[in-house]
Amino acid sequence: MRSVVVARAEEIAPGQRKIVEVGGRSIGVFNIAGRYYALRNRCPHQGGPLCAGFQFGTLSAQRPGEYDHSGPGEIIRCPWHGWEFEVKTGRSWFDPERKRVRSYPASVQDHVDTYPAHQRGRYVVIELGP
Ligand code: FES
Image (cartoon, rainbow, N blue to C red; front, side, top):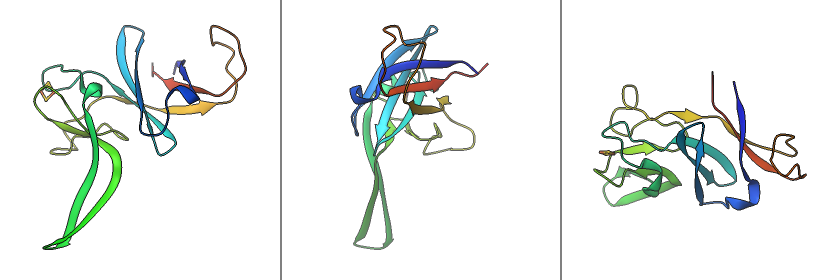
């Protein structure tokens, strides 16, 4: 597992995202309510820039006329044809077991020796896998 520093934590405020290039891959890094998530910026449908899409929450109803909004920013819609995915898991909304986009573990670390400027601070780190 390869750890890569992608941003200072304060660069990606809650509700924001940053798209980075790492090892030849475009990856979107998201801050949802103070936690970080990373998704491959390549839609599994036809390769669209998924992480540039619109983010929104879920809407459910237990009975007609009563709506429950939750998870703001947890769903992202591909800007090309509208396929939707969970930012936290990469699973598609329409077929979560079979259609998904690659996700990467992301976290905040207080100090990272590999950051180019060798500065102390809080950094967002993603794990790229083998
Ligand atoms: S390329 Fe993303 S929905 Fe078609």
